[in-house]
Amino acid sequence: MTERTGPVQAQYRAGEQAVQAAYAEFIRHTQACAECRTGGMDCEVAAQLRQVWRKAKAAVVA
Ligand SMILES: [Zn+2]
Image 1 (cartoon, rainbow, N blue to C red):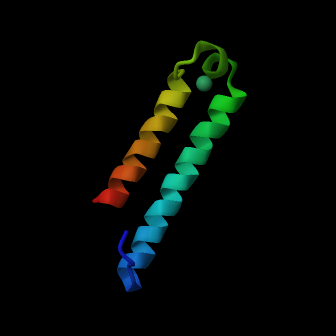
Image 2 (image 1 turned 90 degrees about the horizontal axis):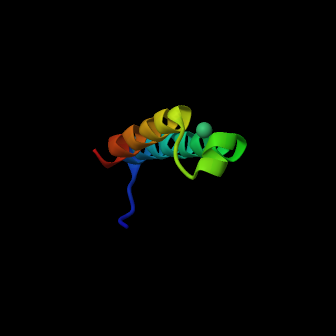
């Protein structure tokens, strides 16, 4: 991975933090949600959180 500097780096880091926050929220939900834990599949809330996470990741890449 190449080293990024300046405004690009700041923007990238902000995006990365959004990804981490979205991921943490998704994980927190799956650990607290009985449906997610026992079902082994995303419930509706988890699916939404996963989408938020995906969008955040896509924004970082773009
Ligand atoms: Zn759930």
